[in-house]
Length: 342
Image: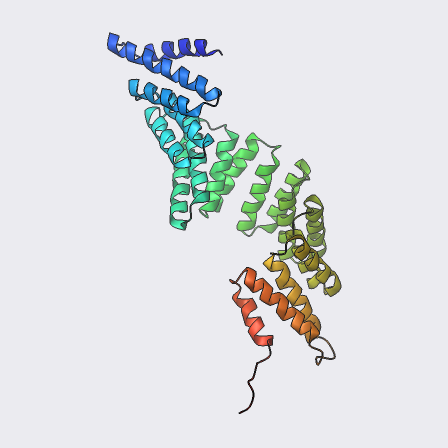
């Protein structure tokens, strides 16, 4: 649709909504002209000019929902989510039956939640997102993204039954979407339903095998069930899918350690450290291997392994000090330093 045709269509819709006086008709005509000019500038990425035209459109007709929504779109492009949320809120108020502003407002609230530094504020944005998504899903029940996003918000609130409901609704709308299936697996895991989670993860992998994070989730679920061989295989596949990530190697280290294959565990942790020298969990695991070998050694007079373990644990705590259990181990095994006798 050309901009001239859009202008004619908008004028017909707005003017035909009710009997208008001459002044009201002129105001609508002015608002539409500025709106179309704003959209043209927006398409040309002249955003400041577009905002100025849209403001004039709103001044002529404050209830022009599409102008408020267009301003919200521009603010999102300019990475100004607070201003975008305000514009979308005004668009929703001007037209409570418009689906797209409600959906975009929900997305913007989620973004604000993700970037909020205070948990209480983040929670408030998620609460708002839920409310606006519920309105959006009422307006358009068959929208895949709305159902999936609503499931994600409920998951963040810890309302796993509602998260499951809307995630399944999304899957019905998009059964071939691997992301929806993997989300359902995460929801099942949170509900302590590991076998349902595994089934969902496998379905997602059948749709798209190239998902290293999902393979990590699958491996972690296997690990909790004590299925070490399956867990190890999942983590090894994750490492192949994302060769630059240290996380799968940390997890393969855990599997090898549980199987008492300490040499393989050490190799996995060392590889993780090589990939990410700031991986606290890799240093932690490396220290556990060294300390285990020292504690189980026949000759504990040789403290080389103990000292290596303590050095690795010190590094882990430097990278992540919030490991109280590891700090207790350091204090347990570090030899007391005594001063000279006087």
